[in-house]
Length: 268
Image (tube, rainbow, N blue to C red):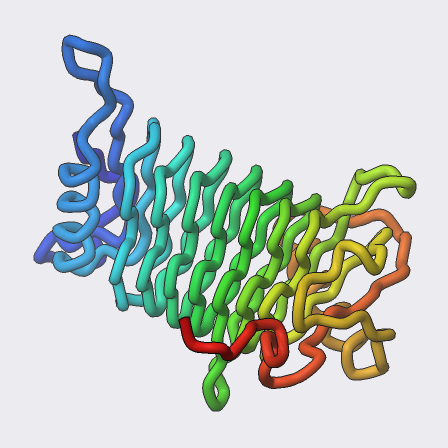
């Protein structure tokens, strides 16, 4: 069902905003197929709609995948894997949790999640921003890259799992560790394993044994703090004020060849 929630912008009845309700279930209780949902989104965008509200979302995959239009999409529910994959421009706001691979290989745009986002968030991001109010799973930001003025950024309010920033080649990951007890670390093991570009900032406890191969801990500098504060300001504009605690560390590459010397070159 598509219901219109705004007045038409001209006599041709092109709507500026629509609601796509996906709450209906089939006779077996299954949600609307993801292909039907995505076809409705693309049809609306091709008709000139600039703001779309999705309600009743329950695991539908590939929402806004490969879209390059400057469109705003609000999601009520839990979108499935590959939310915003390969997208280049849209603004997506999720009022709920997101599943795996949110922002997979996205080039630009923004994804705001008012809950948690799970494994492999930001996989191979080339640009754009992802803000997560809660926590994320493992391998967040794996193989992020940057080029020229395009630098991807991920901000996580809570904690992450293992292999944060694995094989990272550029961009910024900021973990705020909000509401994580001081005696616990907001990150898992093997942080930055294989990293050869980019920066990871973490607020809270980080110990040497958590650092992955090819990564090292550094103290944040003034330029780092400027960027951190800018990202925190934007985070707070979406989710509200953080606690006043500080204490950031930085994880960066130890070299441009993180696995040099770790393998036996002898031919088998």
